[in-house]
Each structure stands twice: as structure tokens, then as C-alpha cells.
Length: 366
Image (cartoon, rainbow, N blue to C red; front, side, top):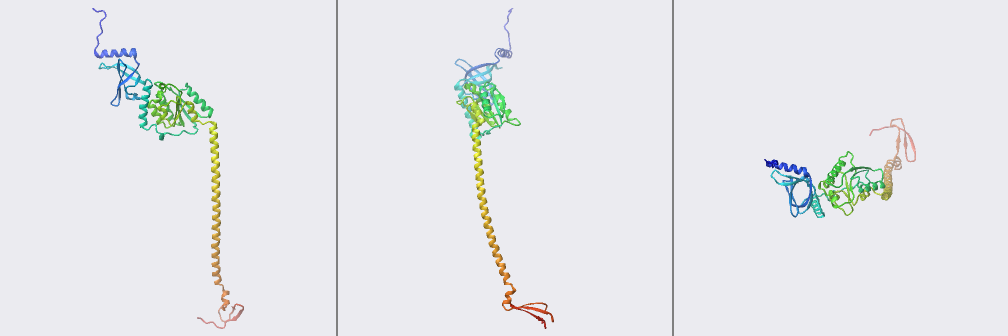
């Protein structure tokens, strides 16, 4: 009897054993290769092969993991778990991936840039201005990064007393994009949100900065209710996060200079503002003085016109009164009789140059 019998399995049991061995020996591995036969199935699942000169391995993942574009011919590094399917096919389930090499990074960058640009995420029309001097600043960065230290130093040198809240995040690596997205969401959901969100990190290689080309991160920056400023890398570096932000800074130091103006700049602006106020005040006074002069002239003209009108009316009244003056009737030979027309009564008869007293002898009715 064989002391070391060969183990016997059913097909399913054997596949399960192989997967257990794979999980125990290499639950996660990184594989680098060239993409071939890339396709998205039913809008849910992503399939592609990763190959080199001699071999090829099938890769599988959810479409929701597709954070940067993949295309045939690109070099990828995938972190994956190997497994054998129940149909006996060997493949790897992708947990994370990143383009490998400058050519693949650039190709992925251009594919995503074209896609988001077509959607209008980078248009100037949707960009907002930053407050001139924000009282509350939200900063998303690694507090251990040199770029963060430079940013805070320049802010404090330029203007103290600002309220700065920092969300400490990773700024490179597989977890960085999700952490930055969560920080953007946190600042946007504050009861009293900051007036500007600054996303900063210092320089690095194209691979280090590739997190800022993550599609979900770029969309989160574009969708932020709070105006955003991105200062990543050096002046020559441009990421999709830069293009989606309301304002792009060349470096973290430049980001601080954009957010908070220097004392000299503030002094010049204050002087310009003061001069403008003085000029507008003087102009307003001059305008009012001219209006007062015009009003005074109109009042004088109106008074003169009214006086002339009243004088004309008085003259008309004078003529009417004069026309009914009884003395004019006396000059024409008439007389004015005063007294009661009763026999025996004495009446006064006034002529132009005399007054006659007479006794009434007779009264006749007409």
C-alpha cells in the first residue's frame, strides 16, 4: 500500500484548493505589463489582458474602479489578487492600478482631459473669483509636506488672524484621491464653510502627481460649492485638478500669495480706494453744487415770473375799481343823493364841487 497516496479532488474542490493556495501565498501582487484587448462589458465590468513578450494574464475589475483611462498599448502596474474561476480560467482581480512610464501617463492624461473638456469642466465661464481677503481658509494637504510649511509661513507673514483649518491627507499613493475627495466634501458640508479651499502639495515626479489626474477627484473639485485653488508641484507641472479648479497656482508658495495679498499691495489698493472715494465725493459735491445753482436760478425766475403775473392782476383790479369810482360819475355831471326818500326828510345832494342839503317835498314811484 502506498504510504504517500496522491490526493484526489473533485473539480470544484481542486479549484477551491488552488484559490486557497494562491490567497495564502500571494493574496495581492503587483504585475506590470502592456494592456491588450481592453473592453467594458454591459457598462459594469472591465476586462483586459496584461502581457509582455512571452506571457499574458487576464484582468478583471468593476467599471467604478476606472479612475483614469485605460487603452490598448498602455503600460500598467496593477495590484491584484490571482484566482482560478470555476471554469478553470486563471485571471487576476484588479484592486488598484496606475499607468507606468511617461508615455502611458501622458496617454491616460490626454484621454481623460479630452473627455472632461468635452463635458465643459475646464471652461472659463464656470470659474469663480476668490474673495479678496478670505477670513476662513480650508487647506487640504499633508501637514508633513514641505509645500504645506511654505504655504502656512507665507500666509502668516502676509496677514495674521485668518482662520485656517487644515484637512490632513495623503497627497500621493492609492489612498490619496479618496482622502482629498472626502476633505472637499467635509469643507463643503460645514455649517459655516471656508471662503476658499486650497489643495496643495510640493513637487514630485509625474507618477507622484498622478493622483491629481484622478477622474473622481477632478469632478469633486469642479463640483465644489466653495471656490477652489490648486497649487500642486512646480510651475511646469499641470494636472487635471489645476484645470478644474477656479484658480491655479504654480506652487504652494504662489497659492499663499494669491489667497492673501502682501502688505504693500494692500497699502496700494487702500490708497487707490481712498483716492477714488475722494474723487467721487468731490465730483458728487460739484454735481450737487451745479444742481443747487440751477435750482436757485429756476426759483428766482419763477418768483420774477410770479411777481410779474401778480402785478398784471393788480393792474387789472385797479382798472376795474377805477371804472366803478363814483367820483368819475360826478365829473360827468351826475350827483350822489344820500338820505331817505320820504316827504319832509332832508337829503344830501353831492355834486363834483358842492354838496346841497334839500328837503323832500314830493316822492313819485316810477
